[in-house]
Image (cartoon, rainbow over all chains, first blue to last red; front, side, top):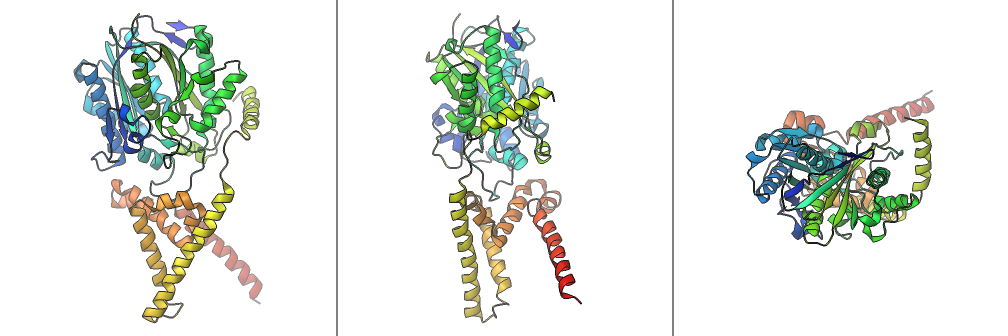
Amino acid sequence: MLTGKQTWSFVSGPRILGTGTVVGSKEGRGPLGDRFDLVHDDPYVGQDSWEKAECKMLEQAQEKAVFKAGLSMEAIDVAIAGDLLAQITSANFAARTAGRPMLGIFSACATSMQAVALAAALVEAKAARYALAATSSHNSSAERIFRFPTEYGAQKPPTAHCTVTGAGAAVVGAGITGVRVSSATIGKVIDLGVQSPWEMGAAMAPAAVDTIVQHLKDTGRSVDDYDLIVTGDLARVGHPIARELLGRQGHDVQDRFQDCGILMYDEHQPEVFSGGSGPACCACVTFAHLLRQLEEGEYRRILVVATGALLSTVTAQQNETIPCVAHAVCFEAGTS
Amino acid sequence: MSVKMGVDQKRYQVFLKGRQPVRPWFRNSVRAFFTGGATCLLGQGIQELIVHYYHFSEKEAGNPTVAILIMLSALLTGLGVYDKFGQWAGAGSAVPVTGFANSIASAALEHKTEGYVAGVGSNMFKVAGPVIVYGVVAAFAVGLVRYLLTHD
């Protein structure tokens, strides 16, 4: 049901029935290392290319999510997935293995919450009993597409991000237990003129702020109604900028404001720069950590705002500025 | 793009000033100076050894020295060390011979999965290509100027 201008309210109460998260070794050594279902020390995950490794992780995350939901893959009515690679390779190739009806989506690092929002909408509309939302990224396959060869000795600036190696999946369906997906706000594409692909935090911050403000306006709530508002991958540079922009619009988020890119790595880990990014960043932190905190009763209601920079290597080389988008999903604890 | 968007973009760029960490250029320069210098010193050392032990003339020792540096750099690239060195040393790691070898070896490694012709062959000079193109163009320009000045 449309509430306000951009927000979908889910009245039937679709829930997260199971989640699966698979990460690489750097993520495993981070502060949330023991929260993930599977940590791979081998960056190739036993495969012979980075792309196959990413696909494998996505398959594993999906299988894990379905298993933890107490279902079999055949019970999934529709899978919604996307990733960073051209032609969303990982998502489509993993879907080949799963053999379920598949909708491929792309909104860069905002894919995770776009997938959850769409899955919840399909369950709400009874177009699916069980919908699988999934996404993945791999540091090396992303480096190769968006930056330099992985072993090339180029120096990155402190505003750079570290693309998370991992995959996250969640089964959304009607159920009686589990975290509820109560609403979702679909973001507008916003471009405030940041050009450098090394400054994605600053580029994406306005999109995150726009979606958060719109969500609050649509639902008639204030930031105090949330125990936590968490952005996808603004990291240590973009997150304070978003906080300041929110403050200027009269939303004082205080200590209720976090970021998956900051939560993923320890500040002192080597070569994480300003923090994590990539579709898997928001997916893994949300599914493995934040949803569990909701289940454990630490929070009642949180808003996850996945942020995506919609650039391509061609547009970056043609000196285009970076359009960004943010999709928000509101998760609420257990009963009612 | 709407007019308002253009105005907003300008305002946001002004807002961002000082809100993003800048590259530590002084530290980077110092590191680049010493690591770049050390790499050259290593090359000089290798050359001296070749002259001393194999009785090459200083000019003849140039080629084997470069070959050894290329092999070292390619080896360190393959072992996954050179990119870490590059992040630490910055421009110091881009010193012609080793930096150039790294750019070729890393691109070759990266595209190994697409086969030896379409992958390695056509992507090997992806990073190093511009250096060659503009190196040749610059050499032509300098050579032309020199010719015009010295030729009578």
